[in-house]
Every structure is written in C-alpha cells, then in structure tokens.
Image 1 (cartoon, helix red, strand yellow):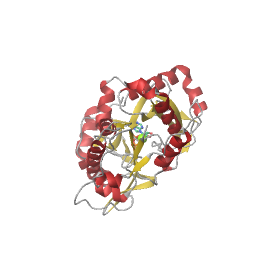
Image 2 (spheres, helix red, strand yellow):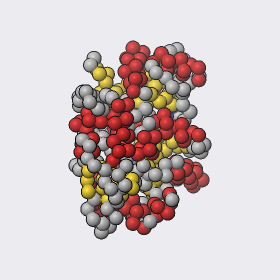
Image 3 (cartoon, protein in one colour):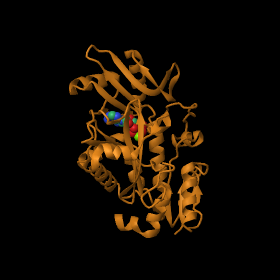
Image 4 (tube, protein in one colour):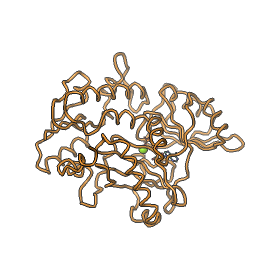
Length: 354
Ligand SMILES: Nc1ncnc2c1ncn2[C@@H]1O[C@H](COP(=O)(O)OP(=O)(O)O)[C@@H](O)[C@H]1O
Ligand SMILES: [Mg+2]
C-alpha cells in the first residue's frame, strides 16, 4: 500500500502521520507539497492519497487564490472564497490520477463551506444550531436577526477555520451591541489576533461584517453552551473510519473555545460525568451520523456543543482537517494518526464505507 500525502512537509500533521505509518511498518509516505500540486505536479497513479490542510503557508495561500492574487500580510483575513475554490480544484485534480483518496475532494469541498455543511447536516436531521437565510452585509444581518427575533448570533466566514473572522454578536433590547471576536480591525484591513477583542460600537461591527461578507457568511443562532465550573465547554471529537475514537474538551471564559486562542483543555471525565451516560451516548451517536454523511473521509473532526443543562447537543461545525489533537489517545492507546493507519491496515475503513 503506497501512501502519498499532499501537505506541507514541515507541517506537524504531515510529520505525525508519517511517523504513524513508519511505526506500523509501512513504507515512508511520499509527501507531495501543496506548492508542487499548485504548480501542476502529476497526480499519483496508484496507492492511497491523504490530502492535508494547505493552511498557514503564505506562498501556498497566494497560489491557491490564483493568478493576480496579492500576498496576505501576516494574519490578514483575505480571499477565503478564492482560496477555497483553489483548494477544491487542486484537490480534485490531484485525486484524479488513480490513487484512492482518504479524503474525498467532494467531501472537503462541503466540509470547508460552513453553509453547505450546515445544510447537509440539517437535511439529515442532525442537530445543528438554526441558521439565518443568506446575508450579504451588516444591514441585512440586523434585519434578518430582527425578523427571526434573535438577539445573539455567531457570524462565521463561510470558509473560515480556527475562529478566523468569527464574531459572537449580541444586541441588547435597547440596541446596545457587543461583538467578541479574534478579528483586529485596522484602517487597512482585518487581521486575526490570538486574543479576543470586544467591539461595542455599531460602526466597528458593521465595518467588520461588511468586509467579511463578500467571501460569504454563515450566521447561526448563538446557543448557550454547557459549563464546567466557571468555564463554557465544548468538544472536538475525531471520528475515524466511522467511529468516534478521540475527544478533547475545550474550555473557555469566552464564547469561543478554539484552543489556539489560549483556551485550556478541560477534563473529559468531568464532562462525561456532568453529561451523564445517556446524553454522552446520544452525542457520540450524532458524531457517527455526521461522519456517515462523509463516507469518503477517513477522518472528520466534529465540534460538538452540549447545551446548557446537558440534555441537548448540537454540531457547531465539521472539520476536514481536524485530526490534530496531540497527546489524546483512543481506547486502543493510539493517537489519531496511529488510529487512522490502524483503520487502513486492519481494513476497517474500507469495510466501513464500501
Ligand atoms: N451557534 C453557536 N453557538 C454557540 N457557540 C458557537 C456556535 N457556533 C460556534 N460556536 C463556538 O465558536 C467556536 C468557533 O466556531 P466554529 O464553527 O467551530 O468555527 P471555526 O472554524 O472558526 O473553528 C466553536 O468552537 C464554538 O465554541
Ligand atoms: Mg471549530
């Protein structure tokens, strides 16, 4: 079984997956850098093909966005829609040569579009937050919120990840506004910060939303997440070959739980105890159902929220490249990459999807 990995050779995911393959006695996977893919490298003709995130590489980012694109400045929020289109086109091409993808480019296309993904899950009866109809700017957002009678929403760039461009927006009855977000608004653009800011003037919030809107927005009702102690919590659940095998609790004093924002990992045993066995099993069943919607994907990373009171849960998003949770082991004692390799070697993945 020849393995090829499309990714950045220096990326931790690529290195960890490579180590897992070697540890299982497989040949060293060939790494096909994204920049080579985007420069027209020939698709592999056989074997298995893992497609990894093209993220966090400025040179790759500008290539993804196509001829004439300008390079993003450090942390700049720029061209998400073009980068998504470029990634899907390149993934589709590189998977067209005969190698069998471990992540179907058609799945990647949906998973990296929060609107499409939400619609798919909702249609399958999977619990997701309610969403507003498409909005294309701030004025329309406020009109749609008023129409729905919602005072609190999450505004998400359709093709964002890692909390980039996400706003937790609350409008008080008197019209007072507060948006918590990692976005840094500057006179010459929007930038991602590793720290959250709170914007409380309508002019600032409107500017941010109107600058994000052309690349597509997905707006959901802000659901009250469950808490452990003084922190809100949610989960990243990695589902490999159809089974939820790894989970990490993300806890925060803010409404955004993404770990790279400085949020701490929480106590999984405490969360399971708080949820109780029935609510936990129901949540894991939801994660399985999510993965079953993406049968061409060896792994998916489900962001799962228990709602305040623990009885209900909802899926915040599903990640195509969500299997990096270092140090978390499955019941079998394997990290996510070793678990993926195990699924391939044991034939569990194929048995599961075909
Ligand atoms: N509808 C929602 N209600 C409450 N919290 C949410 C909602 N959607 C997302 N969140 C929170 O915001 C964080 C980021 O949202 P997510 O959809 O996962 O986007 P990203 O791709 O940026 O991680 C999540 O980890 C979750 O804690
Ligand atoms: Mg997320």
